[in-house]
Length: 237
Image 1: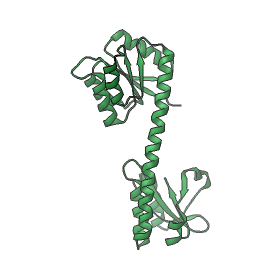
Image 2: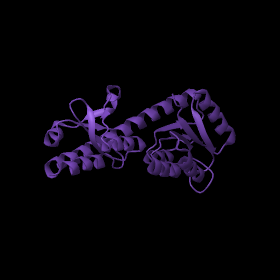
Image 3: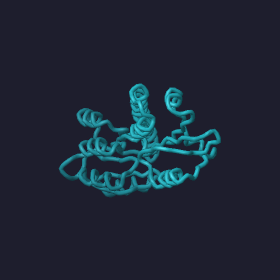
């Protein structure tokens, strides 16, 4: 299992290294140690960590709260604040930056472990929900195509284009197969070298069998879409 990567933003060197050791013992990978808000933003863009542990009071022109806002808005990386300040004003500013956790110093390794585990799980759930909502919007657009599009080739290509819009899927293609599951045509969008090879084989008249061992990566289009143009359409995502 790949280790989760964490960026530490802390301007007290001893504290930063203590946190690093704690994270290593918890089996996390520490990508970098930085001490200012400006460095935090730059390093987050470079490292692309799974989570950032952010002290609120930092060196530089911007504090941890401002840095967290920019990282969250630009990179969608969860932030946990580490701070010795628990005054109401600081708490309100921190809360308004939408952090995924708030740990008061001094803290234990167990405090870090629990906060990080909750933050990563919450972020995973929220990303999943956002993706699901985007997929639903894409499917709504596809349903509109069913009623509007008159040509089957244009229809299937537009379906793939919709499914590869930002925040949906990296690639999508529709395969036309006969009763023996031999592929005789396909359209797609966002695909790489593998599907290009398949297309070349189809165009040259060489059939490509659809193997059952890859079934977990296949989903069927709705009956309404299948019945309008073709008898057997398979969508791979």
